Image (tube, rainbow, N blue to C red):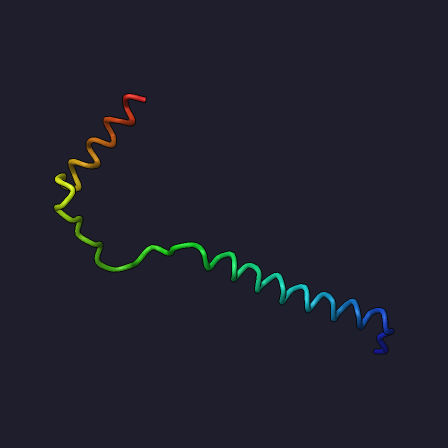
Length: 65
């Protein structure tokens, strides 16, 4: 199997392009925050509402719209 110079350069450019695109995707996806798995965090009482009261008021607000 004899590859001409043009075919070799096309393969090299494709490989470099794939590597560059993978690095770009990694850089872009690093900005996203992933949800934490495990025990959910307890809501703080400093807000004055419990979690159920907060979600009930949200659903009432959405009904008004």
